[in-house]
Image (cartoon, rainbow, N blue to C red; front, side, top):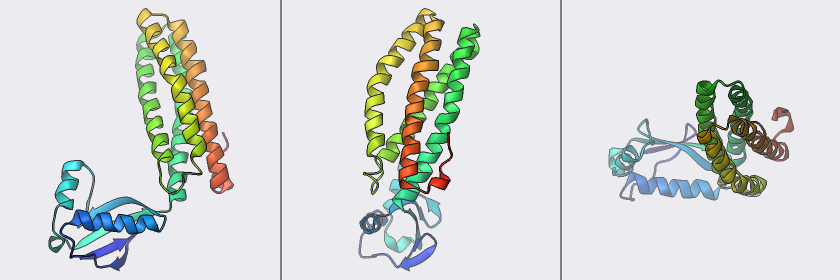
Length: 211
């Protein structure tokens, strides 16, 4: 059985282990000890993705597998990609929040309510991306400010959203528009600022796009 790391064969896998899953655990451990992160795994050309498919592939004996391919990245490189994508996503969301607030003020309730739902979905996606970055191994010191920002903003975000939901249910679109344009935008700006700060401190400053 061949084991390839970023396209280069490294060694033949410990075929004494009973399953592919146990071999992968061993490889992940060895790679983690070297300070790197496994970002993708393919077994005989089939990516490990959803749980049922992953369990099926990982449960196979090594004798039935010809090739395991691992994609590995440096934590800082992975962090830079994740933070840059999330920062750009938040900048786009910020514009959508302003448009949504304007639609509520103009009385275009159908468009505004649909846009508001989309903004909340995007807000959840941004939080998911930042939480993933904050838990990334090997860069705990670099993401300390992000974890602190998330704890602070989450404390304010829940009651803020509760107020907006109540205003929406009551048809109080002025209060809702103010919450969207000022409160949610303020939190988005805080997150963007933190992400830019981490990128400037830990990555090549020339790669950081100014707001």
